Length: 138
Image (tube, rainbow, N blue to C red):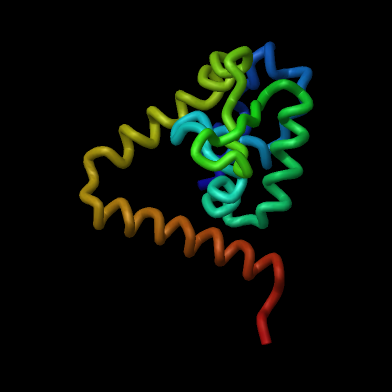
């Protein structure tokens, strides 16, 4: 696991994105939008497992930088649909697509049950790390 994380951290951000001060917290948000397509702030919040206000702040920040666009939902004008701007999409695709292909190759041969076990195992690992950092619970 440490070797894999180390390699992921060394993935170079494309030159076009270097000056935009992207942080690790932006990576998951951009990945969802790249691979699953445009969605609302609430949908992003559910996938990222954070509060909608947190996602709204990130979307606002990335929109001001021109990375994301927010458009009215034609079906419900109160909702805003978030997407990656056409200008930055090729660079974001270049940056993140290799990981998606690698996950597809790794998970593709597995049955749905095996994929679920893999995800459950990673979540158990993540929870173990969080529990360790937070200390023992009462």
